[in-house]
Amino acid sequence: MSDAARRILLGILLLGVSGVTIELLLIGHNEDAVQAIPLALTAATFVTVTLVALKPSAASIRLFQAVMVLMAVSAAVGMYLHFEVNMEFQLEMDPSLQGIDLFRKAILAKTPPALAPGTMMQLALIGLAYTFKHPATGRKA
Image 1 (cartoon, rainbow, N blue to C red):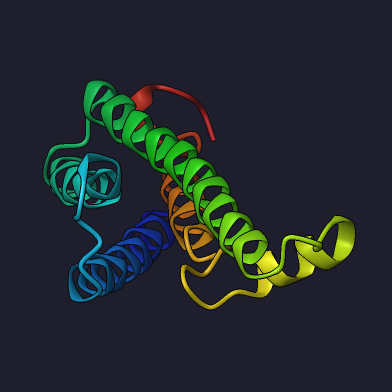
Image 2: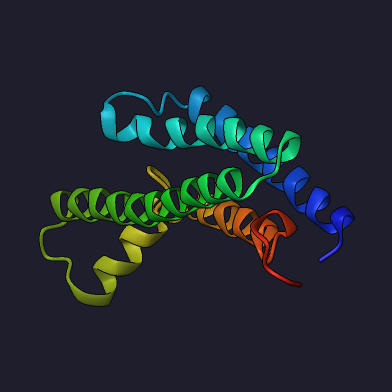
């Protein structure tokens, strides 16, 4: 992969993480420790992006990859938690719901949007793509 392509991926990652961070702050997604995890991971992303952009080394790339993996795991957990909250709410509203009808109402609920954390998954994958066979890791392209 060319250096230009890597810079483009890093730029896309920074734009996306900036947008997610602003959105999380605007909606007050910091009411408890669990809700603060995505914000902590976006902060860690800014730090590690700066590190790999200014001083790419095997260690900085590995640290960046670890943050991206944590962001992907956080996204999966976030989707599960959003969906679970939606299911509980739908069952409170209509205890007779079950099966596909319950699933459909929970997945389509607007608050919290069940798939919104998937954005962080996409950003994590962009970050990991940036590191694919990165020259600083000594792996050949």
